[in-house]
Length: 478
Ligand SMILES: *[C@@H]1O[C@H](CO)[C@@H](O)[C@H](O)[C@H]1NC(C)=O
Ligand SMILES: *[C@@H]1O[C@H](CO)[C@@H](O)[C@H](O)[C@H]1NC(C)=O
Ligand SMILES: *[C@@H]1O[C@H](CO)[C@@H](O)[C@H](O)[C@H]1NC(C)=O
Ligand SMILES: *[C@@H]1O[C@H](CO)[C@@H](O)[C@H](O)[C@H]1NC(C)=O
Ligand SMILES: *[C@@H]1O[C@H](CO)[C@@H](O)[C@H](O)[C@H]1NC(C)=O
Image (tube, rainbow, N blue to C red; front, side, top):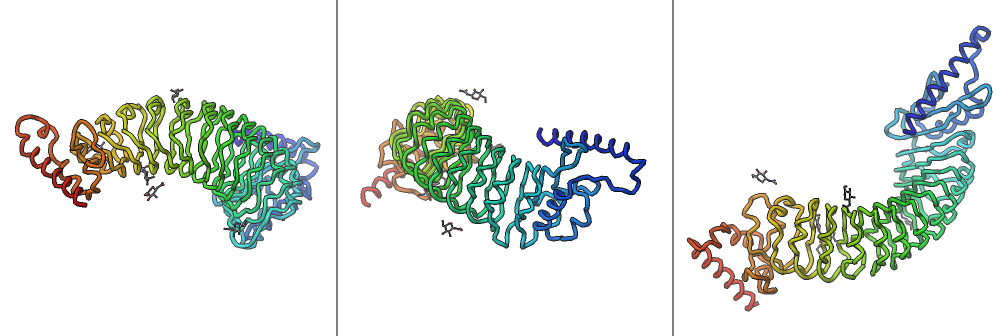
């Protein structure tokens, strides 16, 4: 929308400008009308010259805003009299037909000659020579609204505090560079900032308490850094937040209860950190939460109760969190759930069949736990999920209903036949023996209908019982 309104603005502006040109035509036949201030024109030449390989390119394109318009450069007409063009956007990236960035590409201080610049975005440009963010440079770009420096492997050094002086900034994306040091605490002064993405860098230290000053923030992505310490409780002030991704850092301690105040939050990804349990029950306040991902954190509690109150949850993922206790009943009341991953925990007890009645559930991964008992999930559910139903690594699980009689039901589901069809007998099920895949499949190849019907079942029964007997014997011997 912003783009189309810009194009519209540009066209209207251009027509006005062209109209003026035509009106002035008669008396200025060979005089080229001034299209930009000299200083600004020089500025854009110098900025592009410092970035791009082909130094002749700007010379071959003397008018960046009009006749020889540059790809990646956008201009708007100012409201001065006579009106002039101003460079408002520079975008360099693989998607733009400019010459490639040169190996010695840098950010020229001539950017300061472009006082109308609203968008600066440079993708995949700095990859050989070291480039840093000059404090002098960024503090002074006072009309900047959108700054994106992304995928620049040699963009290193610290994020300058002076960035916090650009009070008009709405989007700040510095992801996939090699930035180091701390997230500057002054950043909290950016009250217009809506999106902050510092992901995939080498940022360290704690997330500053001052982050709570980012009143307009809707998206926060600090993932894939080496941030540590506790989350500041000032997070609770970021009332407009919809998405928080803090995954793959070294954040630790307990979550501040105030996080539960973020009642517009849709996504919370805390995976691959060192966050301890218990997770505060105040998180039941996250009434719009759809994606809760906390894989690989030392939480070590039961599945938290607040989860059962998040009725809009679509994805719930707590793999490798040291969870203990049973699969709680409330999981089957989360009707919008499409993915439930609780693998690599220490969950015990049975898998209740009502999990299989969740209408949208399309991934159920309970692998590598200590679940036990007879698997009684509805057959249509098992068929629907196929390989997305993962139960392996639960040695106490068994089935009296051979699930793999249908060829395309995932081998992940294969649980051994329960010896006692009425329930588990813990260690005495075949599962306890870690049978190889082929051994497991064999007894299940029997047609279940024949097996359980009274006619013609005696042979398979004998075979089955002797099979079980041999295993019991083996297990006693071992
Ligand atoms: C990340 O920063 C630390 C210092 O904070 C430094 O020792 C390390 O080499 C950096 N890693 C990379 C990949 O640059
Ligand atoms: C579930 O999803 C539907 C459709 O996406 C939505 O209308 C509804 O509010 C969601 N929440 C619950 C509790 O059903
Ligand atoms: C299930 O979880 C295990 C262990 O975390 C993982 O290796 C596997 O990829 C998962 N499978 C699916 C289909 O999600
Ligand atoms: C889960 O545990 C298995 C076996 O211990 C391990 O190979 C796998 O990497 C783990 N996966 C995750 C996602 O934790
Ligand atoms: C299962 O396999 C049969 C035949 O092999 C096929 O017709 C059917 O579509 C498959 N079902 C699924 C859910 O893949």
